[in-house]
Length: 119
Length: 98
Length: 137
Image 1 (cartoon, chains in turn blue, green, purple):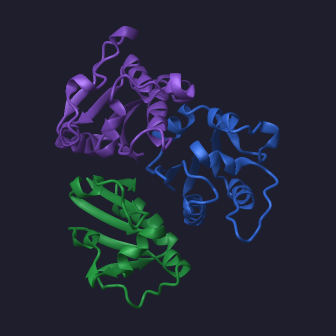
Image 2 (tube, one colour):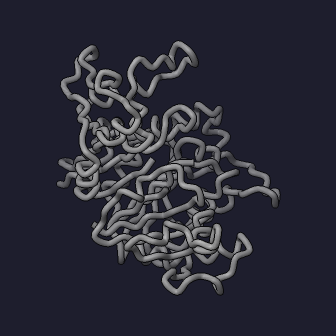
Image 3 (spheres, chains in turn orange, yellow, red):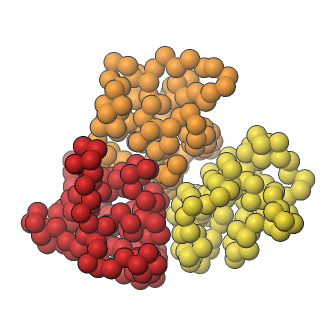
């Protein structure tokens, strides 16, 4: 088993980068690897619960819950999240909240890192 | 260095890839990057395909855009998400997302 | 006990995209990462400004006065203050006609010893090669 950490910085809706990261994480898990997901910048909107899945829009809640049930650690940047008006009570249960050093610590123990940055 | 570069756009607004040197370079075309594998502007293939690199294109992102694998050049390997996992763990040491 | 070297590559202009700022703030967070690591483990980031990213180091940015947000200039100075290596690509500065007098070179006013290093692109490639992981922003 190897460890992959991904940093996601793009918004859930409007970039498709998050959809890519979720599918890649799922494939890595299926192959027996460990995956960590760090959400920062506009990606933090992904942690909001009660997302309504309209078919014209990407959705994340169901996928995040599924990934966490399979052992994926998911953490949102708390500064980025609070800045966007999302409180812990609004967030999907199980998602961790931490400072940016969480990502660096996970990278330290990772075999591979995929930083999905620019929009 | 063994570097896998994910190209996720058709119009790149950064030129980092043009200047990077790597002993082994893999270019993985995903999202709108898959158009590099399919479009020929003025009859010419994308200049991105002229590098000394191994090329891959993600099947899901081709199909999403109404593109099939039939017209993809032989030097571009059509791959799945699972193949990407294997590539980044087994073939390359570092990744870049452009 | 291990040190992991990370290369943060900033290749876009600041402000319109949040990514250059986030590259800097994530790199700066190395200062507190040890609370989450095993004893003796460390993370050493290097920040590299390349391509359009070199524009981020222009001095006299007034983002606080105009929009009430911390300027990228201030984030660069904060990076120097916590002893990060910050490299700026010389060829790209030359391409834009940006001279040394136009950019942030140090944060002496904040008490930092580190200075920004203007280096050829080849040095940045070497930094990428020597890093354990690379993060493109």
